[in-house]
Image (cartoon, rainbow, N blue to C red):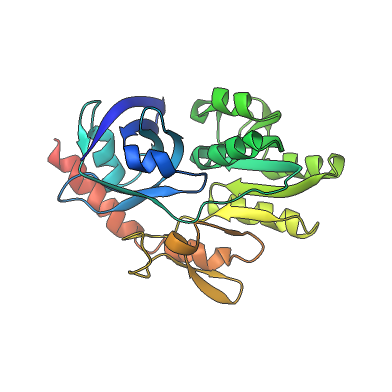
Length: 276
């Protein structure tokens, strides 16, 4: 059991929760995630640790309410308990000797990109953060990002706030003007991470992406989260979830991620009917 200490609605579809998890909070690093099971009838699913506080023994998770399990999680209130939470899992990304990093978050991916930006800043690296959203109503973590990065650039697909366009538009301009960039981290929709990797590949700039394949146990035993990286298959839960963006087979990843869309829609419909 893990008690929910705080809950905030960041936008119409994204929720932030602080959960009591002392042992996890004491070891969590940027790139780590947890496996959560809401109740005894639910599935286990992964969520990235967006932040951790060793003093209070809490971790912060930020999730988009899109499927059956996240619908159930969102129904919980402050004071309620999550049945199971296991972590920290995955391989944390160690940032060493980075002069200037460009961290890119797409939509809810900003919640995963933010801890990387925070870790880089704490070790003394210069951090530029590009955050892209479909429209102004979907912004999240704006104040957190602005307080962490040296330079922040916001974009919206529809031009409803800040600059109209995509994160790759800003990235190209920064790479032309900033000659000290030695790391790019891109986290968000698969098509966005693929586009970013295509831009940086031409300049041979190290690029890290965070993958979100279907995951069942988070320990490498089920094999469900396998992803093709270079000429090898890796397990995102134990070998990642961060990988070299220039080596990832994004096309195969997109196919695997869409394999159970119909089943997910059916599950969401059943859960909605239960509450009517």
